Length: 208
Image (tube, rainbow, N blue to C red; front, side, top):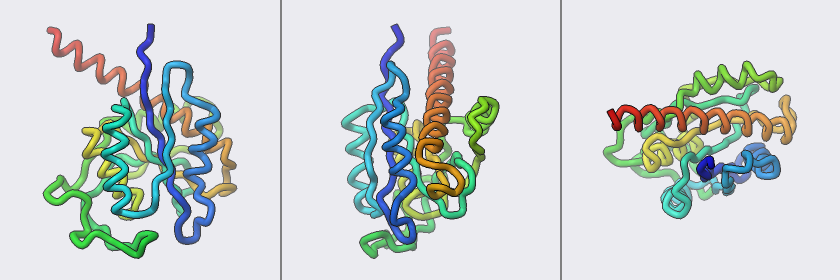
């Protein structure tokens, strides 16, 4: 019997020029597709507000004890589905939907400058590229120092690296919601696969 896994996937509410946020539309579409019979998938829409992120994320981690949390955001500059490798602690001075930004301009006082995901995004990218999905996937080290990056860092901090961030292009540029959802599904299943193997490796090392 394969053990059931819990995965949380979030998208963001509309902000700025993104009156429809492709990330949340794609995540809702992913919910319809699912992640297979052994994965409990929970989806949540995240407000584009620093303080809301600070309140919401700890409660998600505590409530569900997920194996993986994947945050999805939209980037007007993206033309591919982009896997972010790390979250950054400093540089948050852009105003959120409440016209607020953290006075310290950072996520976690005293936290490390940068936290890397426990998931090797290059491997995920390569595997999805080899799967004939027909959607371009790339890797990035800069999630943009706005709510996306802020959310990612906070989640990596809370989940000890068991988090991922995926940037999607706006709808129709060039992919529709269903294509984005299929890409998310493929990416997340690869991430789970990698996490499982790294856990197995750790267990093997401990038992010797």
